[in-house]
Length: 508
Ligand SMILES: Cc1cc2nc3c(=O)[nH]c(=O)nc-3n(C[C@H](O)[C@H](O)[C@H](O)COP(=O)(O)OP(=O)(O)OC[C@H]3O[C@@H](n4cnc5c(N)ncnc54)[C@H](O)[C@@H]3O)c2cc1C
Image (tube, rainbow, N blue to C red):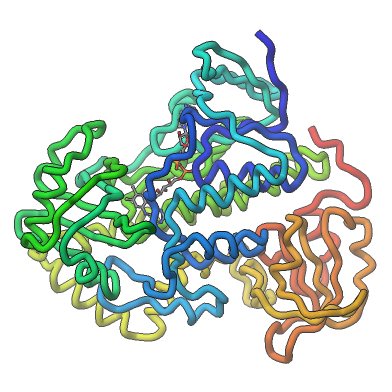
């Protein structure tokens, strides 16, 4: 059997896999994406991307396409546990202070279109069935559309194969956490009746429950479709693979909407749960995990897809730098340290939201809701929770009172007046389209010391409006995080994130 050889094997063409493959293609690194399905999954599933994901798409020039496919994104505020106080994302100084109502299949379309433009493609109906790794790489066995098999070999493999990851089981990675206590369903469907009355307003007014434990939340999709997320006694009893039936949905709608709504047609439907688990290690030798293969939790709060895409943005440029021989393998170890704590926090907050959001009001839960609602009216508490839910508060640097305040934070997408060439005004995010690091000089000092890293970073001289950016210079990683903000240590920082000066490192 012929073995196709490549740089990275990406297993799974969901949001995480496609984002990763796009980053690798942009960096010119050979990669193959495998997916067991014959085509993209057209069910909407995740309904929103959070502001940090929107910012990351903007860094690669993908946001306009995403916004063009979104449902009117200004209509919804951020929320914690569906409590009736909207989270104010604008407090985090972002250009995108709202969740963008972008159905998951549409985000995947945006990413796959870009992957195709960059010359990459997904091998559909390619089911990974086996995996073996040695000191030089990873070999996988795959069943192909004709029912035959093939093998592929890559220097690395990234498992983006979702919640029930075959790769995770194959490498024997433990997936500790809490088992499901609630089973839910989601359906893209055509409804009849007072649909607008059920979808208006903040998310807190769209959650409908019944004393018998039914739950329904309806959000609009395109083309007259709506997405229903639901549960109830029947759904709690259903097997995971049992089809969602109109009768099951009707029972939930009757209990939650008292006959105001009925289902005309179910287009797509699936089941999920609130199981909450996370891998201890995101790296097993040459195998990395990103997205739901690494962490699962209830969709309350709308975080899962966002985590996966942001995992991919963190790992993609690092893998590319190692595969291009610019830097050593140690760069890859920063992935675990930077991304594991982020998902761990989301899992904890999601479990908390499950308690607050659920139908129970006894045992102090009703009072807890009231306390949290009051707290969210306080600007500092609201800002804190907005930063967490939007993914905007992440700081990748260790706390250090002496460090520049921007260090480790996302680079603000400020307007810049370019000094060189024909000048002109750009947003910072327009400088990162090629996926390289950016050394931004804001004072006119040319920062020639960074010249040996040209090609891995771009050096840009610009001016920011007074007060927009309090720094003389900043070095920004390809994923948009500030890793140096003036002062000593530029060469050491460049070496740490982009490899040794001038020459190409030995690689491995
Ligand atoms: C109702 C609902 C609402 C949600 N809302 C939100 C939200 O608003 N915001 C949010 O961020 N998240 C939300 N989520 C979570 C989100 O859907 C998931 O976190 C997201 O799908 C994870 O993306 P992924 O790329 O990691 O995995 P997946 O999307 O599951 O993709 C995995 C891919 O791997 C492929 N695959 C699996 N096994 C193999 C194999 N052996 N060989 C080859 N290919 C394989 C699959 O075919 C699939 O295409 C929601 C989820 C649900 C159920």
